[in-house]
Image 1 (spheres, helix red, strand yellow):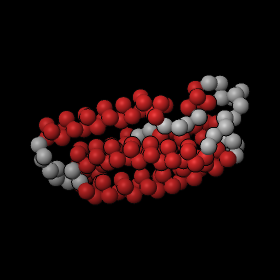
Image 2: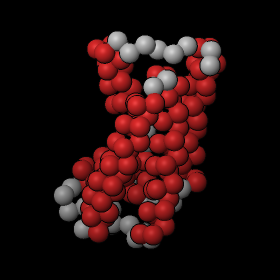
Image 3: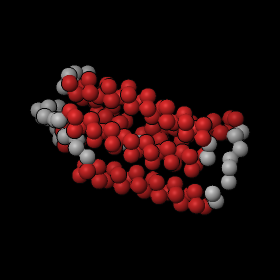
Image 4: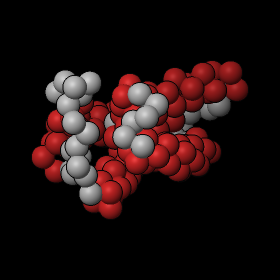
Length: 148
């Protein structure tokens, strides 16, 4: 694939990530969006449907992950980076969602900030911002040839 087409696709994928973020409060069930926007220190802990919250969380995470994997592949054209990223995203989801639902069931017993950032890692493509420079560094250190 020509470099200019890859660049256009990468830009479109980033626009898609921004669009997903913009419509997320209307599309996905998450009562904690309003909870954290308001004065959560004095507000009552919101009622929530665990199953619905989990399904929407998984769907949102999968969408962000698929878009992120496409960006990584188009940017580096390296299947081993994509395979590593798949494993990373899977392990991160298992660990973070377990922590998040423990925190939900204990009504954020470890503090609101901890739960807020765990939730943020699950619903936003933060790992893409971590993996892109890591793979860039890996490319530079190992002099991996880039496919054009």
